[in-house]
Image 1 (cartoon, rainbow, N blue to C red):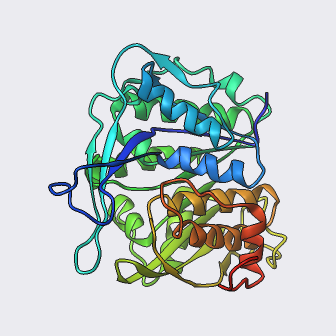
Image 2 (cartoon, rainbow, N blue to C red):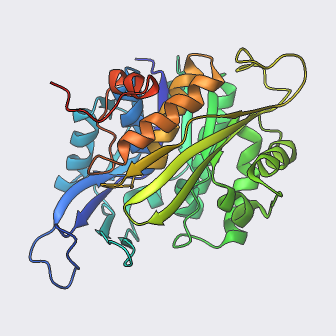
Image 3 (cartoon, one colour):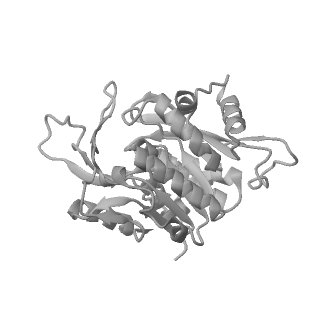
Length: 343
């Protein structure tokens, strides 16, 4: 069946000590599933879109657990490539509280997705009837072959007339800024919408503007991007942040103009800032991507920005990587819903 959105990337088993304990003191670990592109697919499914997640998983109980969790959240697993080889990646999350930051330990070397090869995924079939394709900079950072397949997927998406978005999502534990910059610069030619942070633009592309508006403008012009969205976080405390975003629309973007932009001028759009009390911030950027893509599918860039920030603000309050929210809850946030008990 055709899907509104297809995403491609790794998902891992997440293990974390309960009640802010350190790994060395905890007798138990809570288990969840998470991965950037799967998180985004889940967010879009929760908003009512048909979504599929493409990956390569080991055919064992852990791989089946991940696929089951995807389907439980409404995401199709029909295009997963199964193998009896390799393994499922694991990451360990230790929650901190000021002045101790949260920390992550990865155990993903040799994971099945890192050994994916060109030709394993029938991309032409995957993208038949699809409207949008999303991937992040984590996937090509996993291995040289994963980078090749990411490029293969983006080329196939463009050939099928599918709009594409990339979340830059730089991870220092995967590759150096130079390695990421070389790879991601090549992938930008197949990207319509870049989602990122001001810090990642500088680390990966070496682009530094006098402010985030200029950084977005310089990035869009250098890589001929139609839209650049930048999330903005201020974190005075581990568990209390302010959260917002901005979007830049190129004057050459053929869509998203019907939100106050006329003629050939570039646009800078802004939205509300939310003060968030954080239960779990992992997956917040992925839920922003989901809300943003949701708005773009409706053809409204301002709504994309509003929806992305509101949805990700809600995600901060939910344990786990997935954004277990509804479209109605996001709409209520946009209308200024308060904190009184809903009953």
